[in-house]
Amino acid sequence: MNTAAFNRLFARGWLSLGYAFLYLPIVALIVFSFNDSPLPNVWRGFTLKWYAALPDDREMLAGLWLSLRIAFFTACGSVVLGMLAAFTLVRYRRFTGRTAFSGMVSAPLVMPEVVVGLSLLLMLVSIQRAVGFPERGMLTIWIGHLLLGMAYATVVIQARLQDLNPQLSEAAMDLGARPWQVFTLITLPMIAQSLASAWLLTFTVSLDDVVLSAFLSGPGATTMPLVIFSRARLGLNPSVNAVATLIVLVVAIGVLVASYMIARNERRRAQELAAAGHA
Amino acid sequence: MAGTAQPWLRRLFSGRSVVIGLPYAWLLLFFLLPFLILAKISVSEMENVVFKDLITYKDGLLQLQLKLSNYVFITQDALYYKTYIASLQYAAATTVLCLAIGYPFAYFMARARPERQPLLLMLVMLPFWTSFLLRVYAWKGLLSEHGWVYDAIVGLGLDQVLLAAGFISAPGKLMNTPFSLVLGMTYTYLPFMILPLFGNLAKLDVRLLEAAADLGASPWVAFWKVTVPLSKAGIIAGSMLVFIPCVGEFVIPELLGGPETLMIGRVVWDEFFSNNDWPMASAVAVVMVLLIIVPLALFNKYQAEAQEAGK
Image 1 (cartoon, each protein chain N blue to C red):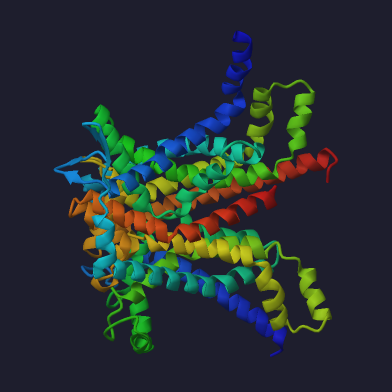
Image 2 (cartoon, chains in turn purple, blue; image 1 turned 180 degrees about the vertical axis):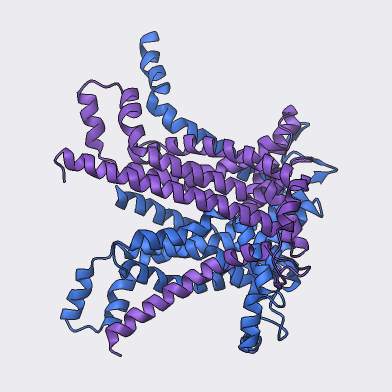
């Protein structure tokens, strides 16, 4: 075998093993959600009983409903704050405290969640003792998730804003558009796709969070990840596998639809550019 | 008077001020202020459930009272400083493993045919979208007795290798060991290593490698002297994205670790939730932040540079 062929084989092998490593746990989760066995990691036969039991699982359903609401409001808030932060970082290169601002925007991405959760809780408790508001619950969890979501949204939207041609908005202004019109008519449609991916990403980040929710939740506000986490701590639990499979299914459908729409938009944009004589 | 106030007022309510001011105020209020409060509580005396004021004024005497006993305790009690060292070690081991697996991975991705790259990239990002908690939980099943990975490792006799290397303490027991902990963290954080490295390596100018080859460098030499130095920014970004969150990781040690793999995130959690000792939990957290402040600064410097480059 010559060197080039060996190199190609080695590269293929490394990539295949890497992807196998990334996807093995997901495959295992799905397979064992259909497992009819008291030992959740030994295959005994096919069953749907874990799925049939889910509608009666009050704790899980209540957690899911709460998590979905928090995730929805987190995603909306994150996109708004992330868009403003991304605009600030891309458009305004000079203002007082810019270094501190860019540091604070990205810090929640890497900062251990235990630290963020604890410090946020201590502050909210201090406020609550002073003014009697807010109670720990959905609102406080939302604030914590929004802090995390804003960091993710900023990264996604910023990447798109940097690619925009500034001449487009300058041309619009030369033609007499007000800054607000430039934003709604030119900038917004061009970054819409990144806003959508930021919304979806922060939705899933919120739907998945354990640590911030644990610190910031109060009595009666148990999110779905907290339910899953407390069961997973005790040991293997087939109900967790069934929930996991449903989540994977929803995500897979969502990603397929989204990537189809993105590909369609890109094609249309390429056609428009070609028609305009740019290509 | 009105003439001088007007431009100032107009500037305050201009679009620019709102765009900058809103996220800025949000971060100051919900990110910076909580840290200051955390630092304050770590040096506060707690009486029942109320914190005593740090600064008191009484009979013309202004007093600043800082309770440093928590910090003294952290440096003296072996439980604390050993846990800090262990956390740093596990995070470092995870970072090295992610780099060892992720660098060739990102390199081969960047060398794949251009039309294949979007698919390869999406396949790396896809696990991000499925719950991290559930994927970590899945390893529990894979590594427990009779699990797929358990059977493969024990069947091949690899548990003897892990035993000899000190990652597990008994043959045939993989769960709740340093091995399962580091494996779980490597699995979870691998995409955070691959993505910045891929972004960096995909931009590498292939002509530089051709030039090196023309000048007589073997592919191996060219890789170490050209490719690796040029991807330094990606290596740093990926390593920091793995290392910093791993130091304070809580969920993975809780699900995959055991009594012998205590990490500092768990200590903060226990001080707060089990012992109800808020000042101690705060002090442990403050020391953790101090430990990761250098990597954090490195990460921020890289982020700023990437922004400038992307302009």
